[in-house]
Amino acid sequence: MKLLISQVVYQWNATTLEPALRSLSESLDVAVRAGELESATLWLSYNGPQPLDEPAADRLLQSAFKWPAHLLPRQRNLGYGGTNNLALRQQMFEVAPNQLEPHVLLVINPDVKPEPEAITNALRRLKEDPECGLVCPRILDWTGTTEAPGHKRYPSLAVLAARLFSPLLKLPVFLALNERYEYRDLPVQETFDDVVLVSGCFMMARDRYWQDLNGFDDGFFMYFEDFDLAARGREKGWRHRYDPAVRIRHAGGGAGQKGWRHRLWFIRSALRFFTRHGWRWWRV
Image 1 (cartoon, rainbow, N blue to C red):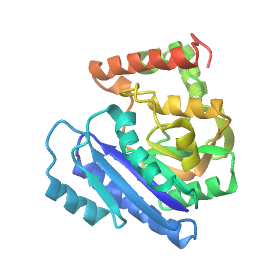
Image 2: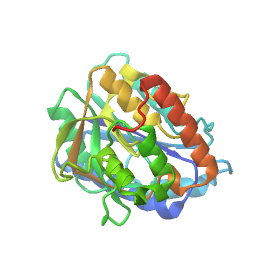
Image 3: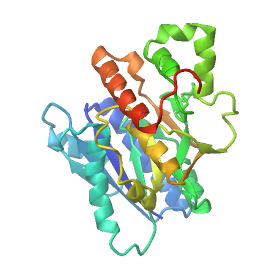
Image 4: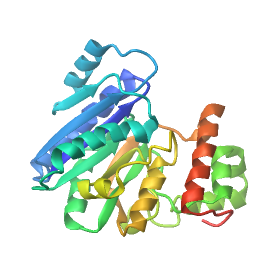
């Protein structure tokens, strides 16, 4: 398979980005040796508020990532989904006209380190399962010691409120609700099908999936663009698969760990999501 990768960077943090790119590059190497990957190209979009030191950025990219890459250093900040769409649509335009061979597209955060076999196992899952929409990885923290589930059930206002205002999670009723939301009632070591929602930190699907949905909804500036993409995919008949063999490490945190501006973005995007896909007050 041929892999096209989109990565958006808003805050250029070489301390995190360099090991993330190096891990991604090494995981691609493993996939080639396993016979699952033919080629890969990375499109790295910078949409941050400060001018990028382009020579330094080029040096970091060339040092850490040993595959073909395009640095897009002055992208408009259309949010996470919108900025990824700029690169995704350009890639799909290049490969779509004749549809001669399969491609896979991966959207990945700049603070994600795929483990060595992650890309191999994700590509293998797509190859073996023609109905698979998004491949859901097993997500751990940056050190690889703590589970950080990215696949979710359909949310309710109650569980989102608890995640946004984390002291609520100290109450048993909200803690139980959150554990169900995060699929913690199912063994994390086992594969299962028809996941409802998928984390945007690692979203891999064949090109037909992205084309079928026309990428992310640009109306989500931040938060819920990933859940909306997964929900729309299920509505079109795709089925998302959780595969614990696809292991990644993610340094990021949720909106509840950030400032009030992020919380307001979270609330606005949640309203858009529920208005489109349906409201739930308590049950998940």
